[in-house]
Length: 65
Ligand code: FES
Image (cartoon, rainbow, N blue to C red):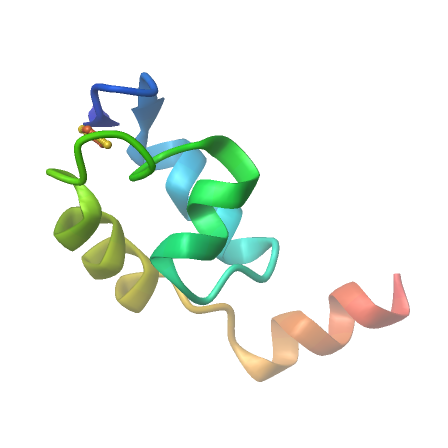
């Protein structure tokens, strides 16, 4: 499902940004341009970031991979 229509970015892409370490809407915007247009999706991006925080265990696995 599209989250950002201006940049044609989906929820899957925003979740991937979160799993890659992005912790703010601006960081997601820098990575994939979501939220960098009209701004109408920024609240939805923030909600996805809050719901998609990688666990400490996952972060440790990623660091050691
Ligand atoms: S819908 Fe995301 S910046 Fe416009």
